[in-house]
Image (cartoon, rainbow, N blue to C red; front, top):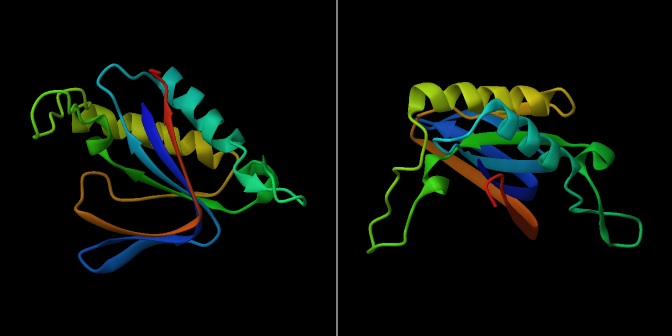
Length: 146
């Protein structure tokens, strides 16, 4: 399971020109589910996201997690994070979990996050527009397989 985590001033997701969910200060998480991922991977990744120390403390050092800083999470499914680009120029998505199984792990991941921090989802499988006002910019890639 891969997550691209961005510290944001704001973020929103739209489908067909209509805003589905939006947050102010917090984290924007793009989630790619691998075909070998399990609920244990989702729990492990959710804990990592919640405890990732990328918010500044009183000395300007990235030393605080979202649990300490507060804010919200916007979680967006993004199978393209599982792209394999080793051969040629066209990405292969063979490692991405099929939709009917991936949605279960995506929703489970969001439930784990939501136990600690208010988490808003995108629309799984939809053609979404995501607007991200990255703060820093701070962007971290997390991978349960690495």
